[in-house]
Image 1 (tube, rainbow, N blue to C red):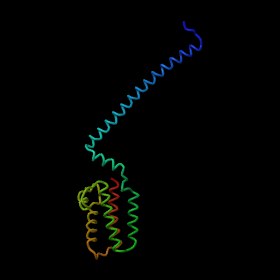
Image 2: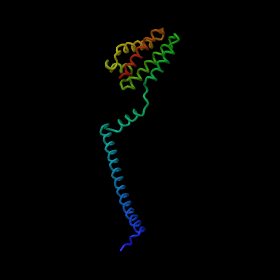
Image 3: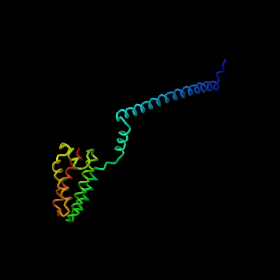
Image 4: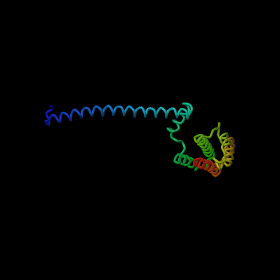
Length: 180
């Protein structure tokens, strides 16, 4: 018969606790394995979904690059660009005004490219844009043709007012594109 002393009772409780801990540890490890397996399956399904959705790795890399890449057009950058343009226009210098027009057209072309309009050059992009995206499209086409004519003529005396009018047309176009 078992002696019902306090030390024996404590020993019995200690043995039960050890066995219970062993059971809890094995149950815990089993549950952690199940959770790990579930997370792995979720990741694998997610990766397969991305490959199916994007159809190939090239598109996936483009999406990743675009998400990581800092956008080239935002309000601060546009404001800074046009501040520098207006600063260059302060002198009524015909050559500087031509440079301003060339820079403005080039920047407008970059904005169109950044937004996703395709074409070999600005003329192609303007011909492919619908007026719903760019309400002042006709003005920009006329301004583009005007700039091309001005830049082709070496002796053309370009004034500050004419330069400002053309730049404001392109600025209005950029403002409309940013609203998209």
